[in-house]
Length: 459
Ligand code: NAD
Image (cartoon, rainbow, N blue to C red; front, top):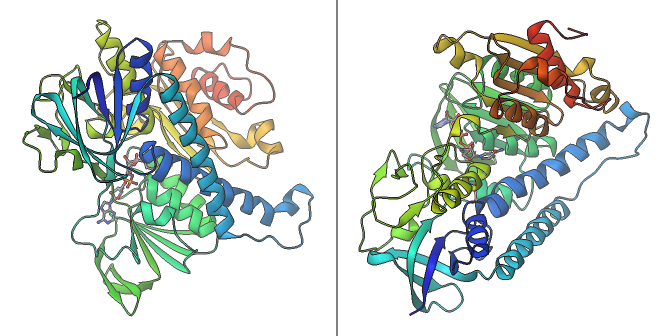
């Protein structure tokens, strides 16, 4: 039986960077992934395929509105199969890149389901031929990710009642779609199908969409999404959901409505398939694998990172966990700090936020000043036909950034300015002295910072 310094379960954005980093330091590393498509949720059933579909949706929108740019286009159309093919090509290209990278770094890849057993033994059932092999590890890292949560109250016929996995691989665009849950998945995929012609209704049980987003922005976005063709009901429950004659019948607010398909997007849960029939017990905490500040689980030398452990379920958080773990294994005294994990929603308009929200500042009675800027006053945004949106920055009395929320063009890129400013403690005056190229969207962020302190020219 082969012994490795490190065996990682899961080849997503937590597992594969950890494998590469440790292999480069001379460790013997193996990575085990149960899926036929290597690369984890982000690459295969999450971030990347969703962004590919959103890009097609956005370009289709632009095509339909070509006249806004003085262009003409006789008939805007789309081919759903080709959109899906494009999405697949992108994931294949990225997957091949990751596999090459792992191979070049000397990481051994096992394609099969890994089962965690006692004494740091991993039993792998091969996807190819069902054979079982055992590998011994000095250290194990569980980077097993998460799967869609589909509570038992919802029907399980995945032909009609989709999770994000089925929605991403849909054969065609349904005429009508009910989305249960107004979180990131619900809003992003809801927008894709609405843009291609589905009548989409999103039902969110909480008083606002997008948990974690500041309440005022969430409220402000409702008419924006309505204009984009999404019907969004907040503070409402889907009271019952049944199949009738091949359609879904939902009771919402006492009234019955019929839909072709339903997307259940009510969160995700840890993928615990590696524990199936195991002779080991791992402690959990609120549905996550319990870890200490060094990512160690209740089992010595078995570590866990990413979606499987506490903190936001985001690809970049998993990669960050991997990076901290590498530092810790090199003897550095560092701990994970999730106070500056940016959240991004890749709809049109994009939405991004980082740090503390205005709601949290009020709740914690932290003193702050607010800076705002509008994309309607930004030259680059207007020339791109992207004048909708705004930036709100929240600063301490001494000019340090406490939090920021952006909705509008390239919000997911601009938010990096906020994270950098907060992480490195740059004050508003020093930040204003940093030369931003003109014209750029990032100037709007600088304006917002300067407006908080009254130093802005246009504020
Ligand atoms: P989520 O937790 O973001 O949102 C789920 C929503 O469903 C919540 O607003 C919740 O109140 C609502 N809900 C729960 N039960 C409900 C019910 N019975 N009826 C109506 N509403 C109900 O979960 P998600 O959107 O499924 O996403 C899962 C995870 O994947 C999240 O952690 C998310 O951050 C991550 N993700 C991130 C991105 C991104 O970064 N762009 C994209 C997709 C997913």
